[in-house]
Length: 155
Length: 105
Image (cartoon, rainbow over the protein chains, first blue to last red):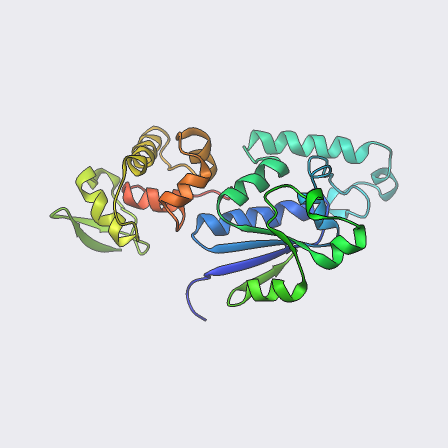
């Protein structure tokens, strides 16, 4: 084992609040340490960079035992919105940026943002559907080229 | 822990090169620490960040994170990374002679 990580490539595959934030925190934290970082958004993770959707990322209240709610309660209409709002307030108090603001900041740190070609094809999305900071829609092969020589983290 | 000589004065630093006694730091030391951190010349914009970091530390007992710097130092995040490519909060803290800031965001 050598001492220092020089580069990370982080794959974001989930579109929930709790699926997206950890990857953003890791990417931003990597840049703060002087580590090169790329974010690769695939499947529902693409919502994080989708112009119309990235302001509406919700906490998953169904199938999320960590919330310690009765299973039936998680599906109540509006519960996800209420829990998301509650989380957003707590995060604001801790000065954790919203997802759109956080992604803009991460792009400013010099990290690369990419969407997955296969997922974009699957959902019928084009470059113009994504926020301007997205550098491109790339194939898995291109992702591996970008990730070469670094660590790959899947979230 | 080890000792270093900056601007003719011996100071103690930790394993990552951060000052263990911020009181022993003087502005004349900054250019030498910057060179060690891979920064060639300190411009006015670098100094704006360094002075801000120093003031924050004096005020709050801890240096600001990159997000805090971007919001309040008057230097935006993009430029911070141009000035301090290997991590603005960390490098500015090191050059300004204060401990490494802790914080996840």
